[in-house]
Amino acid sequence: MSPIRRFDHVGITVRDLDTVTAFFVGLGFEVEGGMRMEGEFVDTVIGIPNSESEMVMLVPPGGGTKLELSSFIRPDHEPGSPAAMSTELGLRNVAFEVDDLQADVDRLAADGYGLVGGIGQYEEMWRMAYVRGPDGIIVALAQRID
Image 1 (cartoon, rainbow, N blue to C red):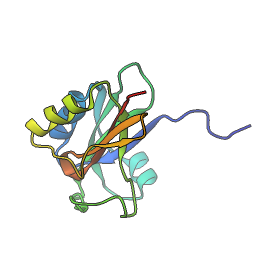
Image 2: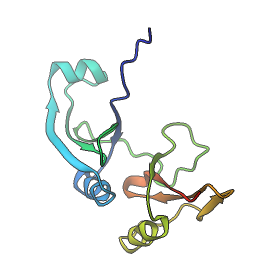
Image 3: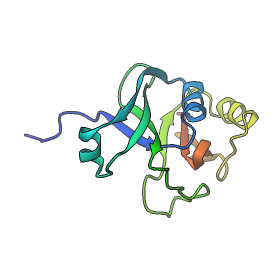
């Protein structure tokens, strides 16, 4: 029997919680809830004494694996590389299947979020693009075309 019961969520630490939340809501996520996190329990789990953060839990359309966004109040967040590429260690991207890749890329570009590379096509099955969202988060958008 597997020790894992289900894939619950992916957590991303961000600088501007409101901006990043709005970005993912614009992609179709819904806010499930949010809260301020501090105290002995959190300090023990994350290994940072006297920490305080705000978090928002987002649910994708139709349910499934959630996205937890956290922004630290205490201590100050540590800046990551806002221009990180796929070869850098760590979380590489968050990927979503979409119905109209070009429309989504155009809408995100109008909001100031550009492509990392270009729109690629894998055989006659998928079109895909990486978009660099707020705080440098790479969001992979894929459209099934077969």
